[in-house]
Picture (cartoon, rainbow, N blue to C red):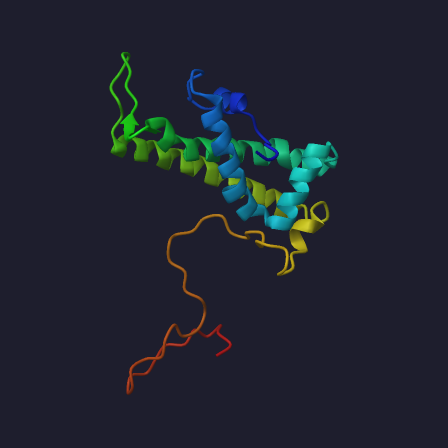
Length: 188
């Protein structure tokens, strides 16, 4: 397992995850949230720099602020979002098993999805705050802005995605005889 920027104990302290949830379940999802979520936001080069500097304890002042005030709150909620399906349903030998408790009734898949949507709103909020901080402090995070195509993933410049993306310009040629629309901002 790589460098973790947030602990299982911190996730339990700042969410409603019970103290009796296995740390190993949370640790694997912290890693997933870091690799998939955080790397997408920071880009591979800056992401690797932050992890290396955190491990070597060589973060600059602005990088320490980035990690403590922006990355950790993001990872707390992103890791919780990642872990929730595994907390709700576990893979056992020869079966998938829903949790069972004497103190309550097991939540339905619909209930779990509802809770995940709330948690997703939270981690997206913290992701946007992180991106705003990076945008407002370009001199402190030059590596974030110096991406080249051979460095892996580029840093994300937008947090929210509505599910539809249409690039400027014609998406496809219109049928013969029908005048097509061309975006005025397009180079075509």
